[in-house]
Image (tube, rainbow, N blue to C red; front, side):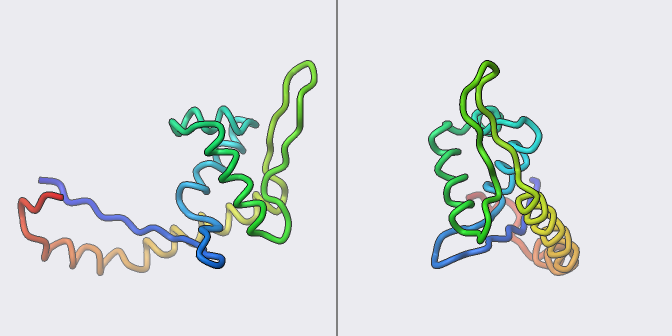
Length: 119
């Protein structure tokens, strides 16, 4: 049996997840692909869902994290703003610091779990 554990950070604004693991992954995908639809495809997510998440993120922060461009000969696209790259970098650093901070405690709690416990 394999025991897995994870730590997930979520930044909440009035009950809305301003930034969490899923939105961070979407932002990374947009940064890598230059496209909301391409990022959504890699996450097995509908374009509409991805677009709504981008709108949420942009609405939650003082400045947009994602900029979009429409149409043209090569089609539209999306990119992270400088603010978006800074927020994503800080969130990623926070995730790494949090994991390091609780590593020993997670190992201890994992050692106390009942074998064969299935959820």
